[in-house]
Length: 227
Image 1 (cartoon, helix red, strand yellow):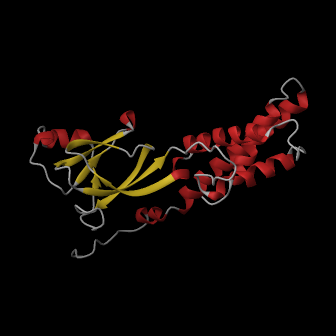
Image 2: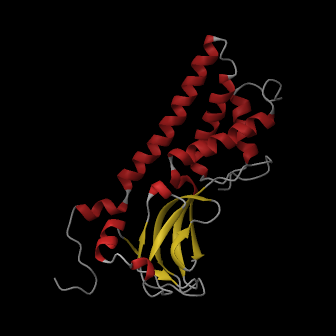
């Protein structure tokens, strides 16, 4: 997240043979860069993966940070000061918890979280168990909505590995302006295909190289357990 918007726009202008930005203004290219970032995060939420220590509200229902749009993981308790690592937090299905304890929403509040529930049908919120006192912090990882860039001097708020894909997206939109001409349509669709392939390729690479894949290949001994 250190590549400046100007670097990506320069690459796109060079590819378009429009270094003086006569046909496509730099403001126009910047607007397409913003659109491209949102499209990437829509397809690949981990592009803006952000980990924070969050103070919980009192009760069971919680909300993501203001810039969040999808919860990725919840890791552990962080005490009442936000910086003291504590008990690990495990996900649980609402059906299981409802069946085991129908009144869990009104259980005795605690600053320490044991479980959480998340449903993408209500993706800006999640639930914790037991109900929180409103003084506990948790460490969570979420997908952030990329901030709209208003200046070329700003760094893109997604991982740098996506800069080539962003160039392709800008070229797709730029060539789409020439939709009245067959070559423009063909170029536009070609850049869109390259953009899509790059995003899908990253997803496949992550799936292939996910360290948790090894858990399915062997029995795991839990530290401190008897074998």
